[in-house]
Amino acid sequence: MSDRIRGYVAALAVGALLLGSTAPAAAAEFDARSSHDVPIVFDVLVMRPLGLMMTMLGGVTWLMATPIVAMTRPTDIMKPFRMLVVRPAMFTFADPLGQHPDRN
Image (cartoon, rainbow, N blue to C red; front, side, top):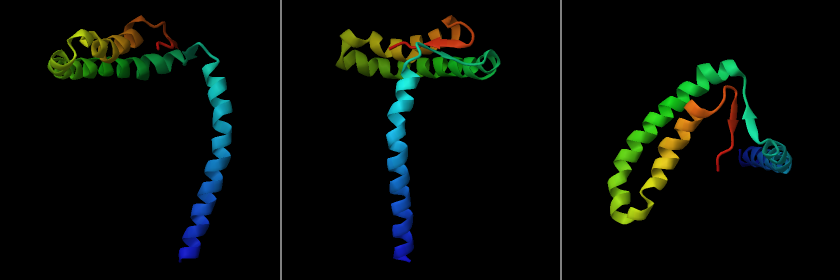
């Protein structure tokens, strides 16, 4: 039985090595685009409602985290707000339909 498991583990390791060598090429191609284009119907029916839910969830999370941030790092109080509320809101309400530029 252990020979069988060794065979599976060896096959998984070879597969991971083969897939790992192609990942940098795919990442370089993916990073070459400045915006992520998606079909407009998918954007309106799936991504925008998810963005709205993430904006609301981020707002609730930010409200819960604000007292902790205010006590530990009062100068950084707006950093979680930008990350948890502003970025999803920009994704949901400001981006053109079908396009979502990178915001780093």
